[in-house]
Image (cartoon, rainbow, N blue to C red; front, side, top):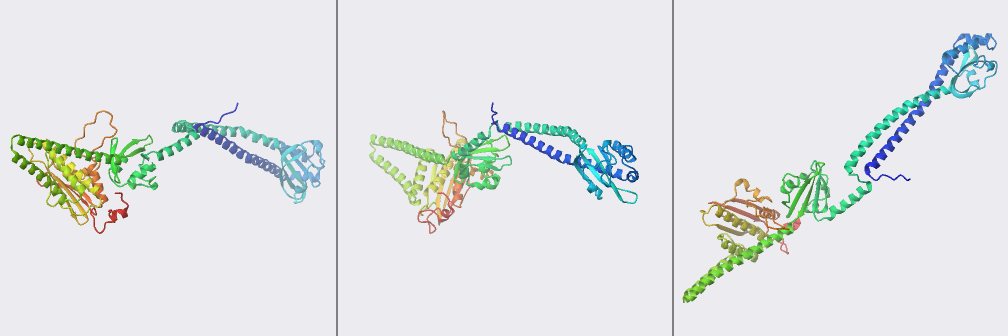
Length: 561
């Protein structure tokens, strides 16, 4: 049977850790035993040397070599054997200057020449070595032997059985292996604990699975049309796909940096940082309307998703404009029907002159108001917007009037921006006066006044109303996306694929004004109500206008129009 390689990351890591731990322990044991053998050999040779030096220092030994003959019962043999037994040496051999033994463990060897070369010791040098002799392999030492007058008369050779050195080494191995085994077991337990933790963190996946998941994640993150931003527990950007970088106006250098460092303070930063609770939170970033959701992760971080709803908002506002046009047409149809009924009644009563006078008066009044708007506001889109909003206001029982300062003779660079701003302001004003009339029926007639004027290349748009006004503490918050004083609309029945949120109109107005380098603010109206003022520098044609109708300053800045 072939052993299959484990697939899980935890199993592979465990096997690798066990192999490494075992290898390290074997290597450490070998590295310890190698010098231990050398140290034991050195200790045995040093012990043999010490015995030899002690024997050579005994004057009776040198005197016996000079005064007696080598024999089994001689004084030299007796003294050497005494020393051997006392020191547990393998042998203690005393030789004369010719290399003839005067003592030996085997008595038959006394009087014979030594089996190894004694020239080094007989020349006055001390020798330590591991060598083979008549008694086998031993750790031996040889020292010169001097008489009382300091003359070299022989040498002393001492041997320590090499088997005893080996036995000491082998005796140390079990204890060493026991320590190594304990260390290996501790390492294995630590490896198992690490493996279990790794298995929980990797959910039992293998390296190939993780690699495939990473490839799939990269493909998915950079292929989806939603922005994805991941944060760590410190609030730093851990990951941002291409769509998120585009929607937030960031580059790749934002990865690894704190959110507050790469994004300007505002609602977008607050939403992404998790300081605003809720789902499908609306925010505006760089002129784009975004829907953000934030989900915390188990490691203390979070993942935020961003959907670009700019086109849907634009379509929604176009739908609002179309709905406003339909309301205006319905109001005019209702008004024309009433007037036709009046004319029909006059004709049936035979009051032909009165009927003609009534028709002429209506036509003159209607034509005069439209002509007044067209004369004072020369741009056709703006004048058409004002005429349509006037009809809607009349249908809702609100008077919409032009201020005396209204005058716009200049050519508008981009009328769509002014239509967006003015349309939002008028719609808010109509809603405000309707709210006040609902809450305070005794209030005076609802009125909305519009002022559109030019200051050289700057367009100034001002809309005032007789509504409840905006409290001072809310005059900045009213321009923040998602903040609205209007009551939320009731949910539509059935599945709704798209439903617009509130609190975006004024936010877009301010963002548009800031793009032009202008401003948008709200103040109180004398007598009650609110006054919204928007200043758009270089929104009108002048010498600084480029040939294609866009301000050079905005073209140089690369701002989208």
